[in-house]
Structures are given as C-alpha cells and as structure tokens.
Image (cartoon, rainbow, N blue to C red; front, side, top):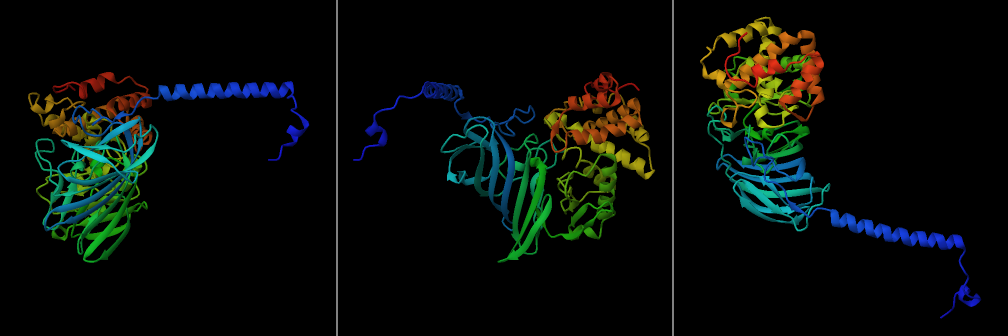
Length: 481
C-alpha cells in the first residue's frame, strides 16, 4: 500500500481556527441529533381517523383525520339488473398521523382496497368502511385510496326529504341521482359531508343509447362494445351530496347564455312535449340575472337535468346542472339556480345551518317575481306571513336549528326568506344588495354558518342586528310585526 504525502512528511498540526471549526461542527452535530430525537419523540403516535365530523344531525357523516382533495369515480350501471360496478380513487391529505381511516359507504359490497397502489386491510362497521394501510400516513402527506365495489344501490327514505325516497333512484330507462343530505355514500365511498369538499372526475358507462349526465363540463363521450362512455369533470370544489351520475334517454341542447356562460340541458323525451316551461330559456336567463345580483357565476357551466321521475317529488341543486323530477315550473328553476351560489359554492358548515341554503333560494324566488314585475318581495313576505295563523305548527320550528327530521320543513324555506326580507327592510336596499355578493365572494367554494352571516350583515350595514336575527331565526312563535 502506498502511503499518503502527509504520512511521509509527518502529521501537520491544525491551526487554531481549524480546531475551533471542528469543535463547532461536532457540537452542531450533537445538537442536531438531540433536536431530531426530541422531534421524533414529540411526534404523536399514529391514531385512527374519527368516523365522523360530529355534525349533530349525522354524527358519522364525513370523516376525521384527512381532507378530501379529489375523487376519480368510475361507475358502470346496468339498468336491466340495477347493478352498479364502481371504482373510486380518493386523493386526500392527512391532517393527523393516521393509523387507519374511514370512508362512508352504505350497503354496497367492497372487493378490494388499495392505499397508494398497495393492498390495504379493510373492515365494515355499519355504514363505515375502515381502511388500514400497510404503513401509517404522516400528517401533511398526500395519499390515494382506491376502493373497488359493487351491488344494487338502494335509495334512502324516511321523513327527512318530504317523506320521499332520495339518492340513487331507478327510472324506467336508467337512474335519477339526487343525494341531499346523506345519500352520496349509497353509490360511492366518500367523506360524505359538505364540510369536506373536493374536485371530481366522473366517468359513466351505460348501455348504448343512454346518456350519462354529471357535474361540470363534458370531457369526452364515445361508444364501444355496446356501451356509451361519458367523462365529466367538476374542477370547482363540490360537496358530495351534489354529485350525480344520472342515466337515461335524454334530448340534449347546448349553447351559451346571453352573458356567455356555457349551458347543457338534458330533458327526458317523455317530458319534452308536455313542458309548460322552456327549461333552457329560463335557465339561461336566471343564470345571467343571478350573476348580476349574487356575484359572478361560480362554475364552468350551467344547465339542467329533467328526468321522468315523479316518485321523487323534489328537485335538487346538483352542482352546475340542477336535477328536476317530473314536477317543475319556472319558480323551481330559479330556486335551484340560486342554490348554485347559496348551497353549492357557499355550503353549510353543519346541517343545522340549512336555512342559509333554502331561505336564500326561496328569497330568490321572491326577487325573481320582483324582477319580472309580478309581485314585490315585500308583498311575497306579507302573503307568506299572513297565510299562517299564530297557532300554526309552522311557527314552532327554530329556523337556525330545525333538527334533522325537519331540516327541510317549510319554515326553513319560508321563514328563512322572511328573515332576509326583514333584514333588507332594516338595513335598506343599498346595504342589502352589497351584502349578498359580499357573502358569496367571501365564502366562495367554502363553508359558512349562521354566525358568519350575522357578522357580515352587521359589518356591511354598520348596524347591530342581534335582535332581528334572534327574533326570526332563534325564537319560535309568530313574530309581531
């Protein structure tokens, strides 16, 4: 072995400066190691994500421990058997160190789960799908969960939605999908609460001759092997209950509103000739008008899905394309389109705040009549107020917290709208019509609650409004005018 030059010449003594640098480096290394040890020791151990966000109306809806970012939904539906085959990939960010996480999924069978491409263990507990990845997920990490599942989706029932069934509902030629408040998880695994919004890609496979209609804009459509494939993309954050995969025979009309917003209207041909209202024309006109009153339209496309589903007995503000059952009229259309701002873009933080959706959309109906010159909003208020005597059960609903089974009671709609008219008359038109677009701008694509609205109303108006809101939202009984 050859010797180095320094060994041949003898060992050189380091300078004092070099010695100090070496000591400093050794000290820094020791300190860094100590700090790293303390950080590791202080990091909380991985724990399971909560099964719900503890909304008092639906304790196990939504999920703790992560924030949903994007859903890739692939669904194939066979109308003759009613069977759905699905594959959902959720991209999410961990908000804690996760040992396991839950997704909401009702009644469907799961055949496999992967986390970041690797098989993961899973169990079922009621409507909760509990997923345990091979390795814990660190807080702040973005990860992907893929669930393969199938079965025959069942609609939900009970008193909540006017006693009607809702969710995934078979029609003579396909399916009508309208999921408020808790039925999205009847057809795809999700964090099924409006507080956890995400963007979506939705791909629908159906027999050739049927059209799959969903949220956002149409990316592609093609036929292959006896099936029609459609791919929709919703690039704006969306609550789960607003997602749809409605399938059937539809006559489709596309275009733009006079203001330039793309329009996509799909109407079941069974209903087309019997329509007493031009859905396309009203949709275009109302979208443009609300854009002036409520602020810029929040989504890429507006439109409608009109299906032959009289059993539903309701319509729903599906994001970008409200879904209408067989019963519909102009005032219903303007109501559902107002929801694109109040409910879809600005969503409730908890379901007890539902008046922020329904009261505002009902008030929009009064504004539309005022705009059309048929009746002032004040006269609509007096008609609703005078129609119900003081001993009516209508006045016994606390609008700010109507309870789960009566969250869609008429008082939430009508008394909610009355509250807004009382506010308008208190603060004046100038402040009121600054408040509405300020609200939709401040909470665009997010969530808000009643307290947020009261604070903003007081800030915009410069008035103290506790008495007004206490009387109309938080107190039962018929208020004295």
